Length: 137
Image (cartoon, rainbow, N blue to C red):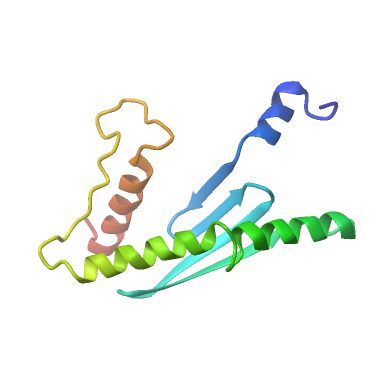
C-alpha cells in the first residue's frame, strides 16, 4: 500500500482484469498475468494456447507458486481451461447440427445504456467487427 496507496492497492489485489485485443489475443490478470490466443484453423477446429508470464527476477519459491497456480487453474488440465474448451466444442457441435439456425443470441443487456459486467455487449462488438472485416461492410 505504501507504493500505490490504499485505493489502488485494493484495486490491484481485489479485481481481476481480462483484456481482449481483437481478434484473438487475451491477456488475463487473475492470479498472475497470462496470455491466451485462439486460432480458428477451420470452420470446425480451433487451437487455444496459453502462457504464464513472470518477472525475470522472481525468486524460485514465488515462481513455483505462480506456475502451480497457472497449471491448476488455466493449464490444460486446470480448473478453467477445460471448461472453456468444452464450451467452445459444444457450441461448434451445436452449430454443425442445426441447419435452421444461422445466428446465435447475444442480446443480453442490449437495451441498457450502461452495460453490466455480465452483459453481452462485448460479444456483439466482437462479432460486428469480425463481420465487417470478413464482408467489407
